[in-house]
Length: 324
Image 1 (cartoon, rainbow, N blue to C red):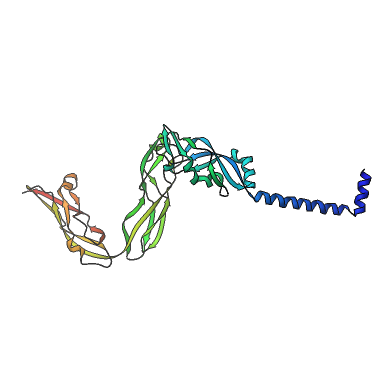
Image 2: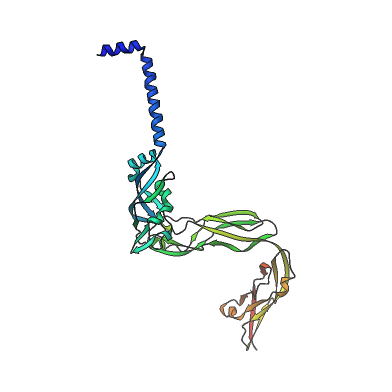
């Protein structure tokens, strides 16, 4: 039989080299067929285990349990094979919005199939179209953890172009954050800081996003905040203003030395009128009662419109009190 087969091949003119070419052609044809079929889109049921991640006040950021998400999907043959082989062994962590998680009881929250549609590309991948979810409601357990709310302190180094300055302080929104962790760690944290912000030669308002400086083993309810600072051009005015007194009892006299102080005002450009003409300074008798040295800070009744900031020289005055 073997001899007959060999004589047949010989009569057809097949050599060993021809066999190699034939096998290569068959291999290429099979590869082309396989790639073509795997690239086609098919309908199939896919299953993916999911761990939920969500920022819920008073609870851990990650769920303690997993839920299997089952959906009828349309995707390539390659994705179908990959999901069938590895899908149920690869746990996806999905970050859900707090408003998507609904409270059930104790530490249990749930999300419905209608809300899952928004997260389908995260769960199954970008090249998968979900036709409908078989999983109706997913229940996740978020263990309770210690937490407290602390202020956010911005860290920054700013410099300005000549004749420009900040109007007010740099603001962050939100200005506080909820922190989560073990109680012994939280007890030592009274505030959290932003990453350092450094800008120079400023001549206009600034705003943007800035990350919070992380603390080891502590979770924040937000990881970044918005910042803003108003910057304005100014002109500087120097003048001398008399220091008055307030809250002095009728049976007392209070004299301040010096009676006038040098005032340096930074005012919005262009200047409208003379803000210094309506600026009033005073020394408060209530401050005198609290001091041992007899020196009181000079205070401003109200800052005139157009004034950005001011400096006083001296800032403290000597107060002499006597009976009438």
